[in-house]
Image (cartoon, rainbow, N blue to C red):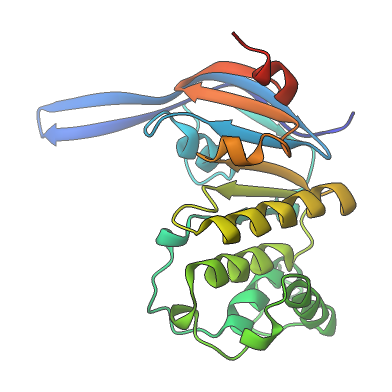
Length: 237
């Protein structure tokens, strides 16, 4: 199979400065290796502070790697990221339509390679399709902060889908959402993975909810404790 990502011996360290004469190096991710194949649905689990989010930041090039390297089987422009809801300010003034449309920015560059303030007809078409897919067209003119948690997450997912990604990376996408919203959200992800061949790499605490969807599972505590298929995970003693 073709790979979306090959993570090879990645270590990520952070320095914590207590005073000018003393510092401590924290190892968030230690010598981690795994592959994510095209069409995979891979879930990363582990306790708080186990390095899951640091690893994702390294993959997205939002945090430097201390050692190791990552081979990308897809262009970085074909990767979409869905953060936790609590990382978005609720007083963000943009409307739903404006937020979703920003997801098309990979296609909105001018001849000098700079982002343009203008969007093409194809960008708008992608926006409309993403909103229709997630059934949020009726929310187009509402402000983000006026929405429920479930609606906000659908808006952020629509934004991620607006650029037609090959790889979708999610960080605790259902934290704080009610059970019905969680179920419908995971069903949607499963549909995107199976019908649209969108590769999914997701951090989650809801493994019991996604075991029936996941193809591979990674358990972390800085290092990898388990990496295998969902069936192998279920059969562990």
